[in-house]
Amino acid sequence: MTRRYDMSRRSAQAVRTRESIISATEKLLRSTRIEEVSLQAIAEEAGTTMQTVLRHMESRDGCFVAVSEVVAARVEKQRGRSAYDSRDEAVTDLVAHYEAEGRLMLNLLAQERKEDAFITAMLRKGRTYHREWVQRCLISQQDRRSVTEIDALVLATDIYAWKLLRLDLGRSARSVVAVMSRVVNSILEAE
Image (cartoon, rainbow, N blue to C red; front, side):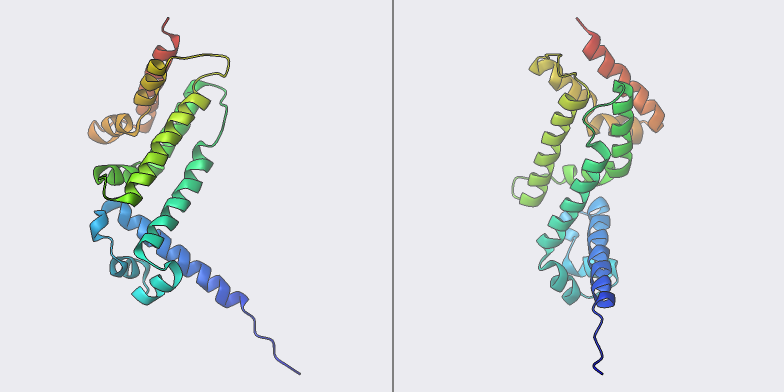
């Protein structure tokens, strides 16, 4: 009788190791300058070796790409709705998104430079996504708005508005929702 080798346990361990590496990379990107996020730092944070990181991700950039894919999937899950019952509900979801992802995005924004392709591409996608979200979730399809009004809505719901209110001024998430909703409604109700 031949004994069959079960690869499922090994495969499951490989998935856990990859997830650990991605999680470690994201944790470092939330609080560390990108230049300091080395393969060695990722390996130490993940509790593994640099060789294991390379085997799973191929490179430091591979780690960054994997993080951007995971974050993009979370963002889509958090903000992917196309319609809300009210603008206030849309803003509430947006603030919840900023609560979950804001510090990572702010750390990347603080490091934005033209020569860093990873950060530049990730932030460009984020800006495009936010503008599309504003148009999809805050403006009804029948309602035509000028570029200036759309820009005002993008500004009113921007991550820096959240940062100012939540982190700099220490307001509660509920207060941030109230302020953003008030500004959004003022823009949309102005004649």
